[in-house]
Image (cartoon, rainbow, N blue to C red):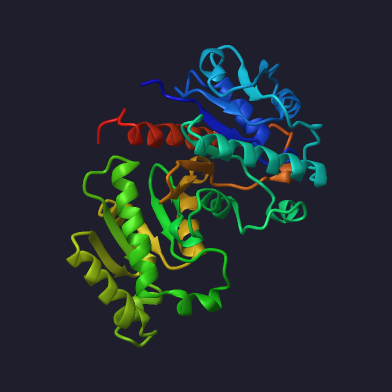
Length: 337
């Protein structure tokens, strides 16, 4: 079976995405990366590479399959949408290019012409100005797959830790009311299934972080952990899922504790992202679980303030490309569990 190339979206052309895509291609052999192509932005990519001291060979293609033979010699870029490279200066034209690239790359993955989707960082506020009506790229890809937003689970994955926020971009004061047995059950099942299917973990182990300090300490700091979260964990364990908790979050991310689980389910955004970024900032990947396609992204933003200055670390982009290739290969049966 021929393994299709990966599709990479350009991200906001004024951010660090284009230069990191270019840097990933430059390091393709050293990092043993699978073939990929970029959906548009040939001029942007060439300009971005120059800021890092590279005269990037870019070759325009008209079909994803062409990337397989060309990847070793030049960065394949789909002909079409493009623009000027103006690092650190986001604008409407750049947002339109980012959205066009994301839309095209997603469609090619859904159509089976690309093995997986890797999305470079976008500026959500800028995209909203040009008609992007989603909280983020995760929800955009879910909608393209005709999946409900709740069926697409965001996992942050690095060499030392995997975390899943059960709630994401919401105010902290609203989190307790959003934590329900149904939410925990749905996301735990999706995560357990994806760790097996996409990551090759035979018997995934999940740990659930407590909502309250010290897991509520027998109700003195809140009843949610004892009355809601613990019974839900017990019900999932009765189904055969290897799951434990609720664990006091202040001790869940130590080196010793991390040996006892494959992914931690966290109650809110910062509970999941702070430890991941503290441990694996330059190699953290945002991977979407539960969809019929593989989608990854570097776990950082556009970083407009340092774009075009050869200061951005390509580690997370390289890790996102590698992880997308590995997950897609497992789905195609090219990797053993």
